[in-house]
Image (cartoon, rainbow, N blue to C red):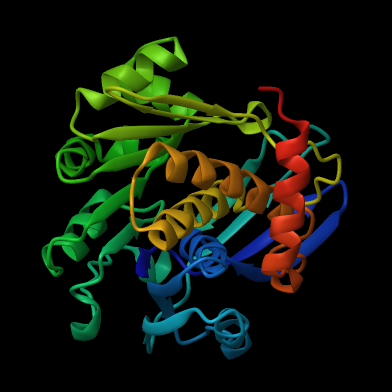
Length: 300
């Protein structure tokens, strides 16, 4: 089943103990739609400037990502981000961010996509998320991702969005920030009171949890020591999770557990290289092999 992802397509400049990259392919929408494409028909809605590198579009198309929703605006510049990873790769310092063409972006769905059953609102402005929602027929499943910037600076719009979606994805620090609650579990419960039917809390090296009124599922992180570039790991997790759910076409406990397992594995592959350098060479067979090894490592 088709999945529409809304998110940024950007230029990432990175400095890390393993090297650096300048104006590499990045953005929440890029990572999420690429990850989803391993499992389902993946469509991306994003906006870039006239400086957009067409080779990056071909990278996405090579995985089958449909770019009919990619808008290229003349006279404007693509969003850019510059980050630095210290020796502790769990932390990233943002040195500069330029929203450029993303500033005030209010997307609408292409006519042929308005009845898409699955929608992932990638890490972006709540106002943009609701603009896209307004342009679509009611999808079967809508999941949104968010971050600390929007919790701090677009709180009212975010709270409105939470009442219009099925699920929310965020990390544990953001969950506590959003709710003012210190415990991750208590924060997740409080988020459910804000509107979503379920919440997924990403916990970095400690894995992730899924919580609804009647369910609680935990998955550890995939054990890997090859961490080259964590940029986009959370977006890849969200895209893969949503892709698996779209492939399954249901929200049964078995599908949810499978989605969390595969999302964790896909995120682990993403962090093994800069940008999409490692990711673009991954095939479904490699994902399945890693998932099988991951299952064997889990204690039941």
